[in-house]
Image (cartoon, rainbow, N blue to C red):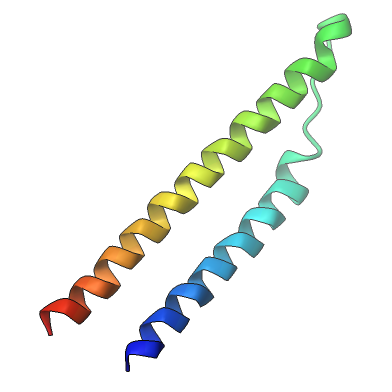
Length: 77
């Protein structure tokens, strides 16, 4: 039963990776900013980078909470 927890954690991790990639490709990549002249691409890239970093932080928090719940149950039982 020990291996099942690890495989479940790895499965959730891959789901988050695939979902994050899909979100970035489908929703974030098409974002374009116009009206700032030469700064259009810089501002657009900055916004995309901030969104990507926020998603990474969210995935780390989600995985940390899942890990804590999963392995805390294992330790107490």
